[in-house]
Picture 1: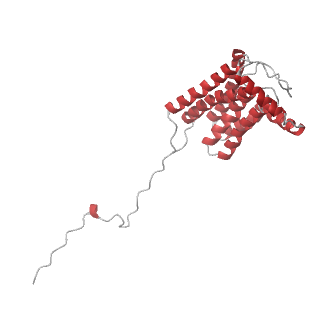
Picture 2: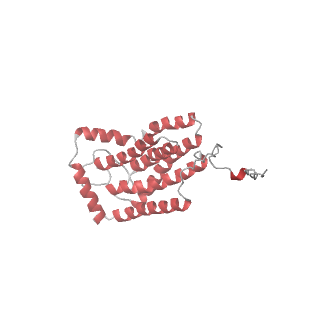
Picture 3: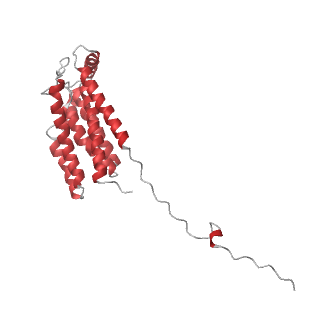
Length: 237
């Protein structure tokens, strides 16, 4: 009787991939964070922009100031009583009232156990205001006199103190909210910074370059806050 050849036993390593064994789960990769070098380059660009605007805007008969005056006069032409009321209310949110406004998110962050973020928010607003007050006498730019101001303003014109405060308060809040998954609220908070900047031009107490310089300088603060927040409260992987 002829012998049938015996088949070799199947080696475990040679089993087909779809033999019914569950496939390993692929680990989710967190979104890449900007490198320290990228952050540093952005900070230098923003700070350089703020300094350049301060230098170029100082001469009262320079090209930058002439552009500023042209924008102010154009904005003066669209003033309306109802719009002036709205702009005044909006600009006040970056004045003394900012303390009361910030109290809500600070308490919310503390309540959820996020004390480092609450501290960043409070310190960010204070640092922005301090930087603005320190820079004003250094630049010593006079307030606009080509249009009638609709509110009273003190100190020098560059940078815009209200815009800097808005960056330190609402801009920092936007960074913290974005890192915690509240994208819509973060967008609203960031947009409010721009609204405050526009109010200062509309009300005739700041040149447009005062606001732009404040946004550039404030951007450096936001980069620092984002870095500190990553170290103090890292996002889950």
